[in-house]
Amino acid sequence: MAELEKNPEEELMMPKIITFLSSLLDKVAQSNDLNRRLQPQKISIFHGLTRPTISIQSYLQRIFKYANCSPSCFVVAYVYLDRFTQSQPSLPINSFNVHRLLITSVLVSAKFMDDMYYNNAYYAKVGGISITEMNLLELDFLFGMRFKLNVTPDTFYTYCSYLQREMLLQFHPQIADSSLNMGSSLKFHCFLNEDESTHQKQLTV
Image 1 (tube, rainbow, N blue to C red):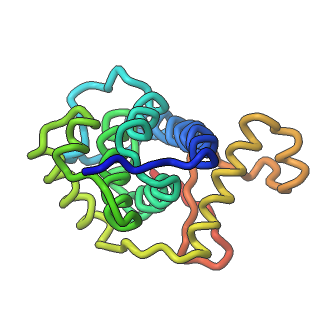
Image 2: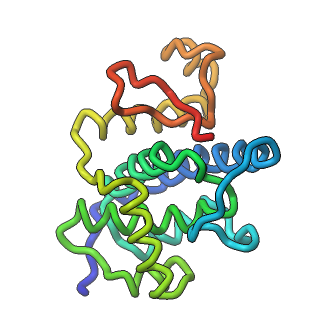
């Protein structure tokens, strides 16, 4: 497949998206790792026997570098991860499954969002897994999120806003607290419930 070109604006935007998304997912994984001791969690095809040595941010940077998908794919992948965890409450994101969930969610997002995208064999190489495993992960992910692939503009911008809040809290906590009026109620390991008009945040555990 021919290389897809990124414009300069996308080049500047993508590292920020990766930073904010990886920071959020890292907090989710750490929180759920602790909760594994308190609540039973199922083992799925997404789980590795050990924690990957590559960080979430480095893994996302690798996907960004080689998958060549549009910036919106990473936001939509975030929406898909949320839908998966809400549909599969016994399979919360943790450090044993977050990498496989990420590569799969980006793959599914790229296929749904982009006119041109790489095939499963290519994504398998990017993700460091076999093509057979990539195919099984995609199928399990689609069934896990009940094939809810459509993302409305309102939902898209809501999740963008949540990532922006993560950015403000990470780099300017005082500004975020005052401008967004979030107070002490914010839970870093929450995702948005897109089905509620108030966008009430839900735990992933």
